[in-house]
Length: 371
Ligand SMILES: Cc1cc2nc3c(=O)[nH]c(=O)nc-3n(C[C@H](O)[C@H](O)[C@H](O)COP(=O)(O)OP(=O)(O)OC[C@H]3O[C@@H](n4cnc5c(N)ncnc54)[C@H](O)[C@@H]3O)c2cc1C
Figure 1 (cartoon, rainbow, N blue to C red):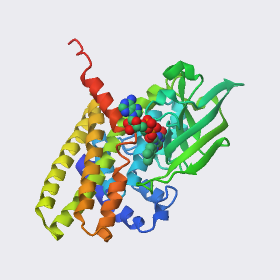
Figure 2 (figure 1 turned 180 degrees about the vertical axis):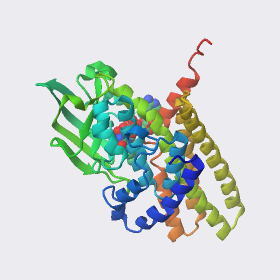
Figure 3 (figure 1 turned 90 degrees about the horizontal axis):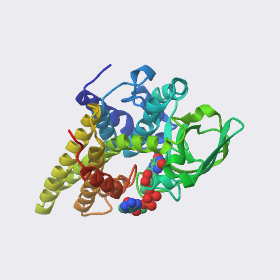
Figure 4 (figure 1 turned 180 degrees about the horizontal axis):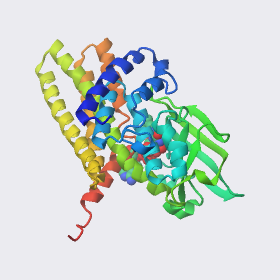
């Protein structure tokens, strides 16, 4: 059933309050393979914004952003899980996959039978993804992958990893191809789960490919175009991550306003005013980026600006909310502290703030096209 962004937002808010919030009391329930999965599936969130013909809901990017924001307001880890699944695993398969690949992988992803992950980052290749070292070779009619990946969200619980490897690092980006890897295949090793300062309920893993063998139909898109697939998917993904950051910013503003009402002061009044204006400015940018994408207009600079503004707003507002609770050990202060730790991730994932500034600066200074 088609719903407007506002109708979906209301529905997502209800879902977050009624279905997610109760799970927060028992963190194991929030593991991606526990009750959380069934609830997200029942709410048809695994196919949000994805092609209807493959089991998705076909909603607009604006709607997807509104839903992620509402979920992040209650549980940012679940919002990030969904954003990764939708934007950088399902979307690239919908765009670059063959009919057979869509039948085999996309449909189960969109109906929630499978959870997706995106495995690009390596210990020595983060912002500079073209420097990745994971290798593949093609012999005897099969691809063989070796290498290490790190900071992979959903990396253990996912059923499908979209990953990237080069057949010759000397070729730079032209050597890199994209592969569809069933997570529970011999040769995929979960080295460890990483502990983080914040967003600790989000699963972040280090993986290794030990002579992982794949049939030829696991190549996604043309050979040598893997980095383009990754970077292109990340542009859209940034709107999703920006929406997650907005959700944290809204939760932090709620905390700050509660503190300002409980124990009013001029400092808190000003903090509320600053936070509100930063939040709404970031929200307008997220919406603009999403609408431009929906109208199929160039949106990359807006996605970068939205992620910069929303992640900055989340950190600053959470900081103010934390400061506003004078008693650092109380329940409210601990909630604000959690938001502050959670907010720290958004200037890093799917391209750091410095990388967004580079993209944005380059875009703005590009020579004007004739006409
Ligand atoms: C919680 C979490 C979840 C993640 N999930 C995933 C995932 O699911 N899949 C995945 O593939 N990756 C994931 N990542 C990895 C993330 O995308 C990288 O951490 C990010 O791209 C930065 O890479 P890096 O950590 O290697 O930092 P580096 O690239 O080493 O950067 C270190 C610092 O240098 C700055 N810097 C680097 N290059 C430049 C430059 N050219 N100009 C100016 N400044 C620069 C950066 O901004 C940063 O401040 C995740 C990370 C985190 C923390």
